[in-house]
Length: 112
Image (cartoon, rainbow, N blue to C red; front, side, top):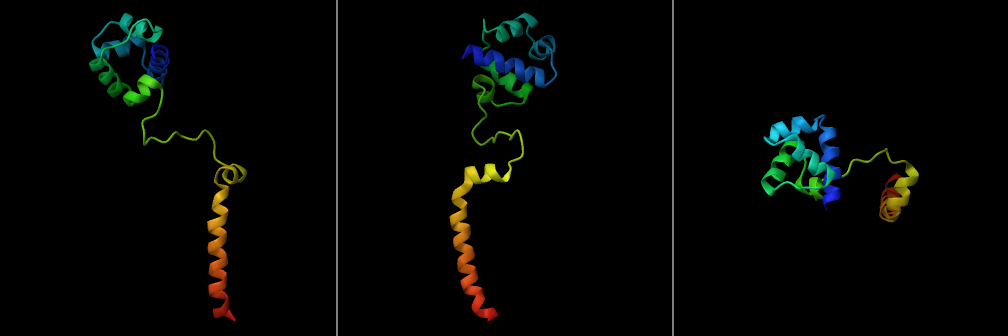
């Protein structure tokens, strides 16, 4: 847990453009404490973890376990192409195809 937390803290801090000293200043602690957290040799208490989530604008799950909170969808790294859609959602062909067959059978007598 310490290693994941250390890596995640460093990543989230960097993403926010904060130095260790700036983060420490906002938490009213020493820069060395933040350095120890990121090195994995120490961990903050629960109150400090909660303050960290507020400053870094993340959930506690994301901070501690590097997992997004339930309900948060990860952002896709690229736009899905047709083959990826078919690979993941091939089963949609059956209900959509069934609907189209039904609709054609229903509508064709009206046009004849």
